[in-house]
Length: 123
Image (cartoon, rainbow, N blue to C red; front, side, top):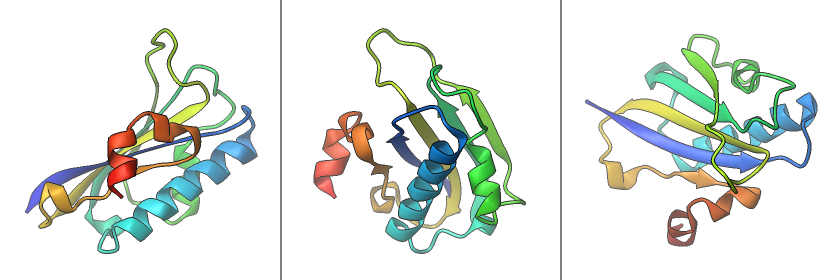
């Protein structure tokens, strides 16, 4: 069994806990829909990052509220690259799976589709 990475990102319109938690839930829900064999028991760990303009809540809270209480979750701040996409939440899920990397579906929503138009257009 290999460890595969599922990448995803979403943006919010403001730094409000309700908007961030809703966005993370939306992002994780779409990742689950696009990767139907993904189960929390098969997740090795999850890394969330947020841009420096988002500070009101930990994005991992949304994953815990979705039932991922046994999954190791880690939050960090995105490096502040000049002219980078603002109000952006990113995720990297480490998934123990027998699927090949080309079968993994990455998800970019809202303004975050600009980060990886190659992936979005392929889906």
